[in-house]
Image 1 (cartoon, rainbow, N blue to C red):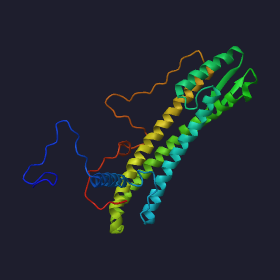
Image 2 (image 1 turned 30 degrees about the vertical axis):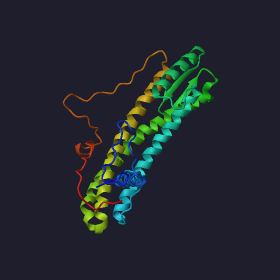
Image 3 (image 1 turned 90 degrees about the vertical axis):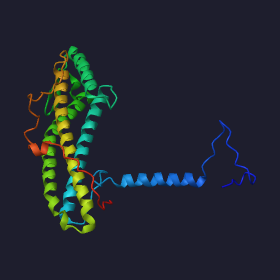
Image 4 (image 1 turned 180 degrees about the vertical axis):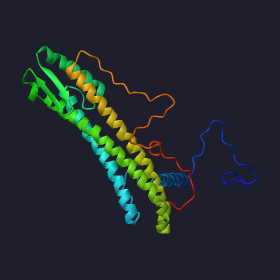
Length: 274
Protein backbone atom coordinates (compact mmCIF):
# COMPACT_ATOMS: atom_id res chain seq x y z
CA UNK A 1 0.00 0.00 0.00
CA UNK A 2 1.36 3.39 -0.97
CA UNK A 3 1.78 6.03 1.66
CA UNK A 4 -0.44 9.08 1.36
CA UNK A 5 2.61 11.22 2.14
CA UNK A 6 4.66 9.85 -0.79
CA UNK A 7 4.08 10.61 -4.46
CA UNK A 8 2.41 7.86 -6.48
CA UNK A 9 4.84 5.22 -7.65
CA UNK A 10 7.44 6.01 -4.95
CA UNK A 11 7.94 4.14 -1.65
CA UNK A 12 7.46 6.12 1.59
CA UNK A 13 10.55 7.88 2.86
CA UNK A 14 12.43 5.97 5.56
CA UNK A 15 12.89 7.55 9.01
CA UNK A 16 16.40 9.00 9.28
CA UNK A 17 18.71 7.03 11.54
CA UNK A 18 18.66 8.46 15.04
CA UNK A 19 15.62 10.57 14.29
CA UNK A 20 12.64 10.89 16.65
CA UNK A 21 10.14 8.06 16.72
CA UNK A 22 6.60 8.93 15.72
CA UNK A 23 4.31 9.44 18.70
CA UNK A 24 1.39 7.05 19.14
CA UNK A 25 -2.01 8.62 18.55
CA UNK A 26 -3.79 10.17 21.51
CA UNK A 27 -6.64 7.68 21.34
CA UNK A 28 -4.17 4.80 21.81
CA UNK A 29 -2.72 6.37 24.97
CA UNK A 30 -6.21 6.96 26.34
CA UNK A 31 -7.20 3.37 25.66
CA UNK A 32 -4.05 2.08 27.41
CA UNK A 33 -4.71 4.25 30.47
CA UNK A 34 -8.29 3.04 30.68
CA UNK A 35 -7.13 -0.57 30.46
CA UNK A 36 -4.65 -0.08 33.31
CA UNK A 37 -7.33 1.50 35.49
CA UNK A 38 -9.72 -1.33 34.75
CA UNK A 39 -7.15 -3.98 35.65
CA UNK A 40 -6.26 -2.11 38.83
CA UNK A 41 -9.88 -1.87 39.91
CA UNK A 42 -10.39 -5.55 39.16
CA UNK A 43 -7.41 -6.48 41.33
CA UNK A 44 -8.67 -4.31 44.19
CA UNK A 45 -12.18 -5.73 43.96
CA UNK A 46 -10.80 -9.25 44.41
CA UNK A 47 -9.86 -8.38 47.98
CA UNK A 48 -12.50 -9.55 50.42
CA UNK A 49 -14.34 -7.36 52.87
CA UNK A 50 -12.47 -9.03 55.74
CA UNK A 51 -9.11 -8.30 54.10
CA UNK A 52 -10.10 -4.66 53.78
CA UNK A 53 -10.98 -4.53 57.46
CA UNK A 54 -14.69 -4.27 56.77
CA UNK A 55 -17.61 -6.17 58.25
CA UNK A 56 -19.07 -8.61 55.74
CA UNK A 57 -22.83 -9.11 55.46
CA UNK A 58 -24.10 -12.20 53.70
CA UNK A 59 -27.81 -11.68 54.35
CA UNK A 60 -27.94 -14.73 56.64
CA UNK A 61 -28.30 -14.08 60.39
CA UNK A 62 -26.08 -17.05 61.24
CA UNK A 63 -23.20 -15.93 59.03
CA UNK A 64 -23.63 -12.23 59.72
CA UNK A 65 -23.34 -12.79 63.48
CA UNK A 66 -20.07 -14.66 62.91
CA UNK A 67 -18.54 -11.99 60.67
CA UNK A 68 -19.64 -9.30 63.14
CA UNK A 69 -17.68 -11.11 65.88
CA UNK A 70 -14.62 -11.42 63.63
CA UNK A 71 -14.75 -7.70 62.92
CA UNK A 72 -15.21 -6.87 66.63
CA UNK A 73 -12.25 -9.08 67.54
CA UNK A 74 -9.98 -7.18 65.19
CA UNK A 75 -11.22 -3.83 66.51
CA UNK A 76 -10.53 -4.92 70.11
CA UNK A 77 -7.02 -5.95 69.11
CA UNK A 78 -6.34 -2.59 67.49
CA UNK A 79 -7.75 -0.78 70.53
CA UNK A 80 -5.49 -2.72 72.92
CA UNK A 81 -2.45 -1.88 70.80
CA UNK A 82 -3.43 1.79 70.76
CA UNK A 83 -3.89 1.92 74.56
CA UNK A 84 -0.42 0.46 75.04
CA UNK A 85 1.11 2.83 72.52
CA UNK A 86 -0.35 5.86 74.28
CA UNK A 87 0.84 4.71 77.70
CA UNK A 88 4.36 4.20 76.39
CA UNK A 89 4.30 7.57 74.65
CA UNK A 90 3.40 9.34 77.90
CA UNK A 91 6.24 7.62 79.75
CA UNK A 92 8.68 8.41 76.93
CA UNK A 93 7.77 12.10 77.07
CA UNK A 94 8.30 12.09 80.86
CA UNK A 95 11.82 10.85 80.21
CA UNK A 96 12.47 13.51 77.58
CA UNK A 97 12.26 11.06 74.69
CA UNK A 98 10.34 11.08 71.44
CA UNK A 99 6.81 9.66 71.92
CA UNK A 100 7.62 6.90 69.43
CA UNK A 101 10.76 5.79 71.29
CA UNK A 102 11.29 2.03 71.45
CA UNK A 103 11.33 -0.19 74.51
CA UNK A 104 15.12 -0.27 74.66
CA UNK A 105 15.43 3.51 74.61
CA UNK A 106 12.77 3.90 77.31
CA UNK A 107 14.42 1.30 79.55
CA UNK A 108 17.88 2.90 79.16
CA UNK A 109 16.54 6.36 79.90
CA UNK A 110 14.63 5.03 82.92
CA UNK A 111 17.80 3.40 84.21
CA UNK A 112 19.70 6.68 83.93
CA UNK A 113 16.92 8.64 85.62
CA UNK A 114 16.58 6.07 88.43
CA UNK A 115 20.29 6.19 89.10
CA UNK A 116 20.20 9.97 89.44
CA UNK A 117 17.21 9.74 91.78
CA UNK A 118 18.97 7.10 93.86
CA UNK A 119 21.85 9.52 94.48
CA UNK A 120 19.24 11.87 95.96
CA UNK A 121 17.87 9.13 98.21
CA UNK A 122 14.78 8.52 96.09
CA UNK A 123 14.07 4.91 95.16
CA UNK A 124 11.48 3.63 92.70
CA UNK A 125 9.54 0.39 93.00
CA UNK A 126 7.65 -1.34 90.19
CA UNK A 127 4.99 -4.02 90.54
CA UNK A 128 2.08 -5.38 88.54
CA UNK A 129 -0.21 -2.79 90.08
CA UNK A 130 1.98 0.16 89.12
CA UNK A 131 4.95 2.09 90.48
CA UNK A 132 5.77 4.06 93.61
CA UNK A 133 8.66 6.03 95.10
CA UNK A 134 10.22 6.27 98.54
CA UNK A 135 12.57 8.77 100.10
CA UNK A 136 11.37 11.96 98.44
CA UNK A 137 8.50 13.98 97.04
CA UNK A 138 8.71 12.34 93.65
CA UNK A 139 5.61 10.21 94.33
CA UNK A 140 3.35 12.75 92.65
CA UNK A 141 5.71 13.57 89.81
CA UNK A 142 4.62 13.00 86.20
CA UNK A 143 7.43 10.46 85.80
CA UNK A 144 6.18 8.13 88.54
CA UNK A 145 2.56 8.61 87.54
CA UNK A 146 3.27 7.78 83.90
CA UNK A 147 5.54 4.88 84.87
CA UNK A 148 2.75 3.48 87.04
CA UNK A 149 0.18 3.93 84.27
CA UNK A 150 2.45 2.29 81.72
CA UNK A 151 3.18 -0.72 83.92
CA UNK A 152 -0.53 -1.27 84.65
CA UNK A 153 -1.32 -1.04 80.94
CA UNK A 154 1.40 -3.57 80.11
CA UNK A 155 0.09 -5.93 82.82
CA UNK A 156 -3.43 -5.57 81.47
CA UNK A 157 -2.10 -6.37 77.99
CA UNK A 158 -0.53 -9.59 79.27
CA UNK A 159 -3.85 -10.74 80.75
CA UNK A 160 -5.84 -9.55 77.75
CA UNK A 161 -3.60 -11.37 75.27
CA UNK A 162 -4.59 -14.76 76.65
CA UNK A 163 -8.28 -13.97 76.33
CA UNK A 164 -7.75 -12.57 72.83
CA UNK A 165 -5.99 -15.75 71.68
CA UNK A 166 -8.76 -17.94 73.02
CA UNK A 167 -11.37 -15.75 71.37
CA UNK A 168 -9.62 -15.87 67.99
CA UNK A 169 -9.16 -19.65 68.22
CA UNK A 170 -12.81 -20.18 69.14
CA UNK A 171 -13.87 -18.03 66.20
CA UNK A 172 -11.69 -20.08 63.86
CA UNK A 173 -13.41 -23.26 65.00
CA UNK A 174 -16.78 -21.58 64.67
CA UNK A 175 -15.99 -20.44 61.13
CA UNK A 176 -14.96 -23.92 60.06
CA UNK A 177 -18.23 -25.20 61.44
CA UNK A 178 -20.09 -22.80 59.15
CA UNK A 179 -18.42 -24.01 55.96
CA UNK A 180 -20.83 -26.94 55.36
CA UNK A 181 -23.78 -24.54 55.63
CA UNK A 182 -22.65 -22.27 52.79
CA UNK A 183 -24.69 -24.32 50.34
CA UNK A 184 -27.81 -23.29 52.25
CA UNK A 185 -27.28 -19.69 51.13
CA UNK A 186 -28.70 -18.27 47.89
CA UNK A 187 -26.60 -19.36 44.94
CA UNK A 188 -25.42 -15.81 44.25
CA UNK A 189 -23.94 -15.57 47.77
CA UNK A 190 -22.17 -18.91 48.07
CA UNK A 191 -18.90 -18.20 46.30
CA UNK A 192 -18.48 -14.81 47.93
CA UNK A 193 -19.20 -16.17 51.41
CA UNK A 194 -16.69 -19.00 50.97
CA UNK A 195 -14.01 -16.46 50.12
CA UNK A 196 -14.94 -14.37 53.15
CA UNK A 197 -14.78 -17.42 55.43
CA UNK A 198 -11.29 -18.23 54.19
CA UNK A 199 -10.20 -14.65 54.65
CA UNK A 200 -11.64 -14.64 58.17
CA UNK A 201 -9.72 -17.80 59.05
CA UNK A 202 -6.46 -16.18 57.90
CA UNK A 203 -7.28 -12.95 59.73
CA UNK A 204 -8.09 -14.74 62.98
CA UNK A 205 -4.83 -16.67 62.80
CA UNK A 206 -2.95 -13.39 62.46
CA UNK A 207 -4.97 -11.92 65.32
CA UNK A 208 -4.01 -14.82 67.57
CA UNK A 209 -0.33 -14.50 66.68
CA UNK A 210 -0.39 -10.74 67.16
CA UNK A 211 -2.04 -11.07 70.58
CA UNK A 212 0.56 -13.64 71.61
CA UNK A 213 3.37 -11.35 70.49
CA UNK A 214 1.89 -8.37 72.35
CA UNK A 215 1.56 -10.37 75.57
CA UNK A 216 5.13 -11.64 75.44
CA UNK A 217 6.42 -8.20 74.56
CA UNK A 218 4.56 -6.57 77.47
CA UNK A 219 5.81 -9.22 79.90
CA UNK A 220 9.40 -8.51 78.93
CA UNK A 221 8.90 -4.75 79.00
CA UNK A 222 7.54 -4.86 82.57
CA UNK A 223 10.64 -6.73 83.68
CA UNK A 224 12.88 -4.28 81.83
CA UNK A 225 11.21 -1.34 83.57
CA UNK A 226 11.41 -3.06 86.94
CA UNK A 227 15.12 -3.72 86.55
CA UNK A 228 15.76 -0.20 85.31
CA UNK A 229 13.82 1.42 88.16
CA UNK A 230 14.86 -0.77 91.09
CA UNK A 231 18.36 -1.85 90.08
CA UNK A 232 19.62 0.80 87.62
CA UNK A 233 23.26 -0.40 87.76
CA UNK A 234 22.31 -3.81 86.41
CA UNK A 235 22.06 -4.32 82.66
CA UNK A 236 18.89 -6.27 81.94
CA UNK A 237 18.51 -8.35 78.80
CA UNK A 238 15.30 -10.13 78.01
CA UNK A 239 15.61 -13.57 76.54
CA UNK A 240 13.02 -15.81 75.00
CA UNK A 241 13.23 -19.43 76.06
CA UNK A 242 13.78 -21.58 72.99
CA UNK A 243 11.58 -24.67 72.54
CA UNK A 244 13.23 -28.09 72.98
CA UNK A 245 15.02 -29.41 69.93
CA UNK A 246 12.92 -31.56 67.70
CA UNK A 247 9.66 -30.12 69.01
CA UNK A 248 7.57 -27.38 67.51
CA UNK A 249 6.77 -24.60 69.97
CA UNK A 250 3.07 -24.49 70.71
CA UNK A 251 1.40 -22.63 73.61
CA UNK A 252 -0.69 -24.85 75.92
CA UNK A 253 -3.79 -22.83 75.08
CA UNK A 254 -3.78 -24.01 71.49
CA UNK A 255 -4.33 -27.37 69.90
CA UNK A 256 -2.05 -28.51 67.02
CA UNK A 257 -4.81 -27.64 64.57
CA UNK A 258 -5.10 -24.07 65.87
CA UNK A 259 -1.38 -23.36 66.16
CA UNK A 260 -0.71 -23.97 62.48
CA UNK A 261 -1.42 -21.23 59.95
CA UNK A 262 -4.36 -21.79 57.60
CA UNK A 263 -3.52 -23.22 54.23
CA UNK A 264 -3.92 -20.89 51.28
CA UNK A 265 -6.49 -22.51 48.97
CA UNK A 266 -5.70 -22.89 45.30
CA UNK A 267 -7.41 -20.50 42.95
CA UNK A 268 -10.64 -21.81 41.56
CA UNK A 269 -12.98 -20.41 38.90
CA UNK A 270 -16.11 -18.97 40.42
CA UNK A 271 -18.42 -16.01 40.34
CA UNK A 272 -16.85 -14.19 43.29
CA UNK A 273 -17.54 -10.50 43.01
CA UNK A 274 -17.60 -8.61 46.31
